[in-house]
Amino acid sequence: MMNKILAKSYLWFLLALLYSPILIIMIFSFTEAKVLGNWTGFSFKLYSSLFSGGMHHSLMSAIVNTFVIALIAATVSTALGSIAAIGIFNMKSRGRAVMNFTNNIPIMNPDIITGVSLFLLFVSFGVSQGFTTVVLAHIAFCTPYVVLSVMPRLKKMNPNIYEAALDLGATPFQALRKVILPEILPGMISGFILAFTLSIDDFAVTIFTIGNEGLETLSTYIYADARKGGLTPELRPLSTIIFVTVLVLLIVINRRAEKQKKE
Image 1 (cartoon, rainbow, N blue to C red):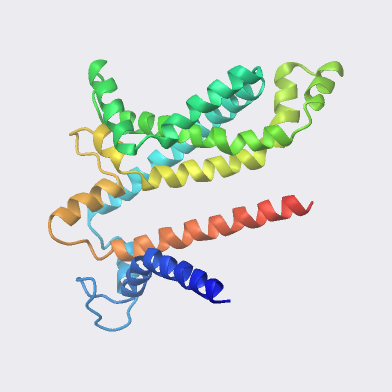
Image 2 (tube, rainbow, N blue to C red; image 1 turned 180 degrees about the vertical axis):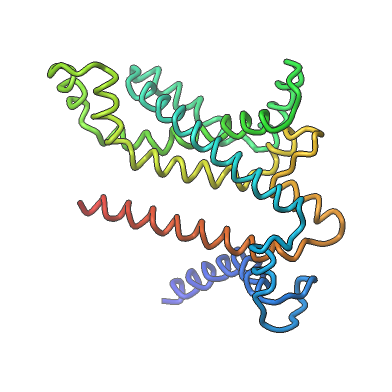
Protein backbone atom coordinates (compact mmCIF):
# COMPACT_ATOMS: atom_id res chain seq x y z
CA MET A 1 0.00 0.00 0.00
CA MET A 2 2.78 2.41 0.94
CA ASN A 3 4.70 1.58 -2.22
CA LYS A 4 1.66 2.41 -4.37
CA ILE A 5 1.20 5.75 -2.62
CA LEU A 6 4.88 6.62 -3.11
CA ALA A 7 4.79 5.55 -6.77
CA LYS A 8 1.69 7.67 -7.48
CA SER A 9 3.13 10.63 -5.60
CA TYR A 10 6.34 10.38 -7.61
CA LEU A 11 4.34 10.18 -10.86
CA TRP A 12 2.22 13.23 -10.00
CA PHE A 13 5.37 15.12 -8.99
CA LEU A 14 6.96 14.43 -12.38
CA LEU A 15 3.77 15.46 -14.20
CA ALA A 16 3.58 18.68 -12.16
CA LEU A 17 7.24 19.39 -12.94
CA LEU A 18 6.66 18.88 -16.67
CA TYR A 19 3.37 20.71 -17.09
CA SER A 20 3.54 23.52 -14.53
CA PRO A 21 5.53 25.84 -16.87
CA ILE A 22 2.91 25.31 -19.59
CA LEU A 23 0.12 25.93 -17.08
CA ILE A 24 1.77 29.18 -15.96
CA ILE A 25 1.99 30.39 -19.58
CA MET A 26 -1.68 29.48 -20.13
CA ILE A 27 -2.79 31.35 -16.98
CA PHE A 28 -0.82 34.49 -17.81
CA SER A 29 -2.09 34.48 -21.39
CA PHE A 30 -5.35 35.82 -19.91
CA THR A 31 -3.82 39.04 -18.63
CA GLU A 32 -2.46 41.97 -20.62
CA ALA A 33 0.71 42.41 -18.55
CA LYS A 34 3.81 42.58 -20.73
CA VAL A 35 5.98 40.81 -18.14
CA LEU A 36 5.27 37.15 -17.41
CA GLY A 37 4.37 36.72 -13.74
CA ASN A 38 2.78 40.15 -13.40
CA TRP A 39 -1.01 39.70 -13.11
CA THR A 40 -2.93 42.88 -13.93
CA GLY A 41 -6.40 41.40 -14.13
CA PHE A 42 -8.29 38.99 -16.36
CA SER A 43 -8.26 40.07 -19.99
CA PHE A 44 -8.51 38.69 -23.54
CA LYS A 45 -6.43 41.59 -24.91
CA LEU A 46 -3.45 39.41 -25.89
CA TYR A 47 -5.73 37.01 -27.77
CA SER A 48 -7.43 39.97 -29.44
CA SER A 49 -4.04 41.39 -30.41
CA LEU A 50 -2.95 38.01 -31.74
CA PHE A 51 -5.92 37.68 -34.11
CA SER A 52 -6.47 41.35 -34.99
CA GLY A 53 -2.96 41.91 -36.36
CA GLY A 54 -1.81 44.04 -33.45
CA MET A 55 1.31 41.94 -32.89
CA HIS A 56 4.67 42.59 -34.50
CA HIS A 57 4.93 42.01 -38.24
CA SER A 58 8.05 39.85 -37.75
CA LEU A 59 6.15 37.51 -35.40
CA MET A 60 3.29 37.15 -37.89
CA SER A 61 5.81 36.40 -40.63
CA ALA A 62 7.51 33.80 -38.40
CA ILE A 63 4.16 32.10 -37.70
CA VAL A 64 3.29 31.94 -41.41
CA ASN A 65 6.74 30.61 -42.31
CA THR A 66 6.54 27.99 -39.56
CA PHE A 67 3.19 26.59 -40.68
CA VAL A 68 4.00 26.72 -44.41
CA ILE A 69 7.28 24.88 -43.84
CA ALA A 70 5.57 22.36 -41.54
CA LEU A 71 2.77 21.71 -44.06
CA ILE A 72 5.16 21.18 -46.98
CA ALA A 73 7.56 19.07 -44.94
CA ALA A 74 4.78 16.93 -43.45
CA THR A 75 3.14 16.34 -46.84
CA VAL A 76 6.36 15.38 -48.64
CA SER A 77 7.72 13.30 -45.75
CA THR A 78 4.39 11.44 -45.48
CA ALA A 79 4.59 10.52 -49.17
CA LEU A 80 8.27 9.56 -49.02
CA GLY A 81 7.96 7.76 -45.68
CA SER A 82 4.94 5.73 -46.82
CA ILE A 83 6.70 4.63 -50.03
CA ALA A 84 9.86 3.82 -48.06
CA ALA A 85 7.88 1.80 -45.50
CA ILE A 86 6.25 -0.26 -48.27
CA GLY A 87 9.65 -0.88 -49.86
CA ILE A 88 11.29 -1.86 -46.56
CA PHE A 89 8.38 -4.15 -45.64
CA ASN A 90 8.72 -6.07 -48.92
CA MET A 91 12.46 -6.65 -48.51
CA LYS A 92 13.96 -9.91 -47.27
CA SER A 93 14.29 -10.27 -43.51
CA ARG A 94 18.00 -9.40 -43.33
CA GLY A 95 17.68 -6.38 -45.62
CA ARG A 96 14.57 -5.26 -43.72
CA ALA A 97 16.44 -5.43 -40.41
CA VAL A 98 19.33 -3.38 -41.83
CA MET A 99 16.98 -0.73 -43.25
CA ASN A 100 14.96 -0.52 -40.03
CA PHE A 101 18.20 0.00 -38.11
CA THR A 102 19.30 2.66 -40.61
CA ASN A 103 15.93 4.38 -40.34
CA ASN A 104 16.24 4.51 -36.54
CA ILE A 105 19.62 6.26 -36.59
CA PRO A 106 18.26 9.76 -37.46
CA ILE A 107 15.60 9.35 -34.76
CA MET A 108 18.11 8.43 -32.06
CA ASN A 109 20.66 10.96 -33.31
CA PRO A 110 20.67 14.30 -31.39
CA ASP A 111 19.03 17.13 -33.34
CA ILE A 112 22.12 19.30 -33.12
CA ILE A 113 24.20 16.61 -34.90
CA THR A 114 21.57 16.38 -37.64
CA GLY A 115 21.54 20.16 -37.96
CA VAL A 116 25.34 20.45 -38.21
CA SER A 117 25.48 17.55 -40.71
CA LEU A 118 22.88 19.13 -42.98
CA PHE A 119 24.59 22.52 -42.66
CA LEU A 120 27.91 21.02 -43.81
CA LEU A 121 26.13 19.16 -46.62
CA PHE A 122 24.52 22.32 -47.99
CA VAL A 123 27.78 24.28 -47.65
CA SER A 124 29.80 21.56 -49.42
CA PHE A 125 27.38 21.62 -52.38
CA GLY A 126 27.31 25.42 -52.44
CA VAL A 127 23.56 25.61 -51.75
CA SER A 128 22.51 29.03 -50.46
CA GLN A 129 20.63 28.58 -47.20
CA GLY A 130 17.10 29.84 -46.78
CA PHE A 131 13.52 28.62 -47.15
CA THR A 132 14.40 25.69 -49.44
CA THR A 133 17.16 24.31 -47.21
CA VAL A 134 14.93 24.51 -44.12
CA VAL A 135 12.17 22.60 -45.92
CA LEU A 136 14.63 19.95 -47.16
CA ALA A 137 16.10 19.61 -43.67
CA HIS A 138 12.66 19.18 -42.10
CA ILE A 139 11.70 16.57 -44.70
CA ALA A 140 14.94 14.70 -43.94
CA PHE A 141 14.36 14.41 -40.19
CA CYS A 142 10.56 13.90 -40.38
CA THR A 143 10.54 11.05 -42.92
CA PRO A 144 11.93 8.34 -40.54
CA TYR A 145 9.08 9.07 -38.10
CA VAL A 146 6.54 8.52 -40.88
CA VAL A 147 8.19 5.18 -41.70
CA LEU A 148 7.77 4.13 -38.06
CA SER A 149 4.09 5.20 -38.12
CA VAL A 150 3.25 3.32 -41.33
CA MET A 151 5.20 0.11 -40.68
CA PRO A 152 2.83 -1.32 -38.00
CA ARG A 153 -0.12 -0.95 -40.39
CA LEU A 154 1.76 -2.92 -43.05
CA LYS A 155 2.54 -5.69 -40.54
CA LYS A 156 -1.16 -6.00 -39.70
CA MET A 157 -2.18 -6.13 -43.37
CA ASN A 158 -2.87 -9.46 -45.03
CA PRO A 159 -0.10 -9.77 -47.68
CA ASN A 160 -2.32 -11.98 -49.86
CA ILE A 161 -4.70 -9.07 -50.60
CA TYR A 162 -2.15 -7.36 -52.85
CA GLU A 163 -1.40 -10.59 -54.72
CA ALA A 164 -5.13 -11.24 -55.12
CA ALA A 165 -5.62 -7.79 -56.64
CA LEU A 166 -2.88 -8.50 -59.19
CA ASP A 167 -4.40 -11.90 -60.02
CA LEU A 168 -7.75 -10.21 -60.65
CA GLY A 169 -6.21 -7.95 -63.28
CA ALA A 170 -5.20 -4.85 -61.36
CA THR A 171 -1.96 -3.14 -62.30
CA PRO A 172 0.67 -2.72 -59.52
CA PHE A 173 -0.24 0.99 -59.27
CA GLN A 174 -3.97 0.23 -59.05
CA ALA A 175 -3.31 -2.40 -56.36
CA LEU A 176 -1.18 0.12 -54.48
CA ARG A 177 -3.85 2.83 -54.70
CA LYS A 178 -6.93 0.72 -54.02
CA VAL A 179 -5.59 -1.99 -51.70
CA ILE A 180 -2.46 -0.93 -49.84
CA LEU A 181 -3.11 2.79 -49.36
CA PRO A 182 -6.53 2.33 -47.69
CA GLU A 183 -4.94 -0.20 -45.32
CA ILE A 184 -2.08 2.07 -44.27
CA LEU A 185 -4.07 5.34 -44.32
CA PRO A 186 -4.41 5.56 -40.49
CA GLY A 187 -0.64 5.19 -40.17
CA MET A 188 -0.12 7.85 -42.84
CA ILE A 189 -2.42 10.27 -41.00
CA SER A 190 -0.60 9.63 -37.72
CA GLY A 191 2.73 10.10 -39.49
CA PHE A 192 1.56 13.35 -41.07
CA ILE A 193 0.41 14.78 -37.74
CA LEU A 194 3.65 13.68 -36.05
CA ALA A 195 5.78 15.20 -38.83
CA PHE A 196 3.75 18.42 -38.72
CA THR A 197 4.19 18.85 -34.96
CA LEU A 198 7.89 17.93 -35.11
CA SER A 199 8.47 20.51 -37.82
CA ILE A 200 6.69 23.25 -35.86
CA ASP A 201 8.65 22.35 -32.71
CA ASP A 202 12.11 22.06 -34.27
CA PHE A 203 14.84 24.55 -33.45
CA ALA A 204 18.25 22.86 -33.61
CA VAL A 205 18.00 21.74 -37.25
CA THR A 206 16.32 24.99 -38.34
CA ILE A 207 18.92 27.32 -36.79
CA PHE A 208 21.73 25.58 -38.72
CA THR A 209 19.94 25.60 -42.10
CA ILE A 210 18.02 28.89 -42.05
CA GLY A 211 20.87 31.06 -43.36
CA ASN A 212 21.21 34.84 -43.14
CA GLU A 213 18.51 35.96 -45.57
CA GLY A 214 16.18 37.18 -42.82
CA LEU A 215 13.94 34.11 -42.77
CA GLU A 216 12.48 33.37 -39.34
CA THR A 217 10.38 30.56 -37.92
CA LEU A 218 8.55 30.60 -34.61
CA SER A 219 11.35 28.76 -32.78
CA THR A 220 14.11 31.06 -34.07
CA TYR A 221 11.96 34.12 -33.36
CA ILE A 222 11.42 33.04 -29.74
CA TYR A 223 15.15 32.34 -29.37
CA ALA A 224 16.08 35.79 -30.72
CA ASP A 225 13.35 37.44 -28.64
CA ALA A 226 14.53 35.73 -25.45
CA ARG A 227 18.12 36.88 -26.05
CA LYS A 228 16.88 40.48 -26.03
CA GLY A 229 15.81 40.04 -22.42
CA GLY A 230 12.09 39.31 -22.74
CA LEU A 231 9.36 37.62 -24.74
CA THR A 232 6.67 39.21 -26.88
CA PRO A 233 3.43 39.01 -24.81
CA GLU A 234 1.46 37.58 -27.76
CA LEU A 235 3.63 34.47 -27.58
CA ARG A 236 1.73 33.41 -24.45
CA PRO A 237 -1.70 33.02 -26.13
CA LEU A 238 -0.02 31.60 -29.23
CA SER A 239 1.74 28.93 -27.14
CA THR A 240 -1.53 28.15 -25.38
CA ILE A 241 -3.38 27.68 -28.67
CA ILE A 242 -0.65 25.44 -30.11
CA PHE A 243 -0.52 23.32 -26.94
CA VAL A 244 -4.31 22.88 -26.81
CA THR A 245 -4.44 22.05 -30.54
CA VAL A 246 -1.72 19.39 -30.22
CA LEU A 247 -3.42 18.00 -27.10
CA VAL A 248 -6.75 17.68 -28.94
CA LEU A 249 -5.04 15.96 -31.88
CA LEU A 250 -3.33 13.48 -29.56
CA ILE A 251 -6.64 12.70 -27.82
CA VAL A 252 -8.33 12.13 -31.19
CA ILE A 253 -5.49 9.88 -32.42
CA ASN A 254 -5.48 7.82 -29.21
CA ARG A 255 -9.26 7.39 -29.28
CA ARG A 256 -9.13 6.30 -32.90
CA ALA A 257 -6.39 3.79 -32.04
CA GLU A 258 -8.44 2.41 -29.14
CA LYS A 259 -11.51 2.15 -31.36
CA GLN A 260 -9.56 0.24 -34.01
CA LYS A 261 -8.21 -2.17 -31.41
CA LYS A 262 -11.76 -2.93 -30.21
CA GLU A 263 -12.90 -3.53 -33.77
